[in-house]
Image (cartoon, rainbow, N blue to C red; front, top):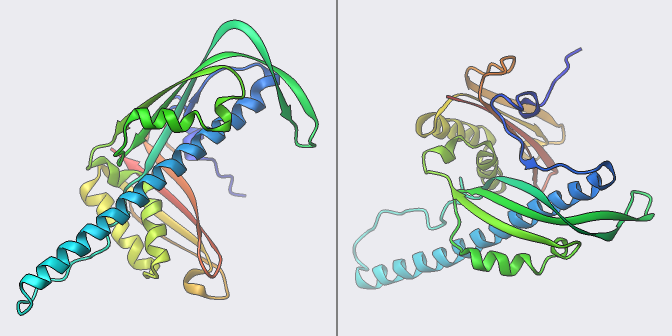
Length: 270
């Protein structure tokens, strides 16, 4: 039987690092995991809302400029360009959470188990540092802090938030599997053939990125057919059995009219 392992968990400590860095007691471990999940979900949704607002304003400006150009020169022809600004290769790449507990008076919070039974947990004051790696961030840190204070996870127990934003360069964004998955999902929702999308994504990653090998696998009801199938494409080499190889991995789900599609991406970087 084939026994597969996650490429990221297999390489922790060699080429991959932990996305959450903290230490907790066994009683408080589940509560801190739930808190990390809420923090990541909030920041991802928040950045996506900012991108959507920016894209809408940009579309309006492009249409206004085109109308002005048509009114001035009605007789002359103009080369047609894409009016819709591309959403590809924009968004959050990774979110790192670092927690540091400060020794002060302990506070109690009520947490519910899977069965719905509430229990009191002892949690001390903590300092939480959130590091966001993104390619698109047109917003100030003061606005971030104001919106974070309105969330539920901010008031569960005493804590301090420190937010850091690190922008990724234009050349490295093409080799990030999370952004490639967002690009493929955006194109599939616009009814573009999936084979053409896979070729475009691999070509961009190979030409403008720092990738040596790449593999894309899609599974589900492709093009609305009744029978589900899987299609994959690879270029270059993927030494999955070597721990020293810098391999990034992403697993993404795409909601379409015909059903849910599963997407997996492997990238071998230099």
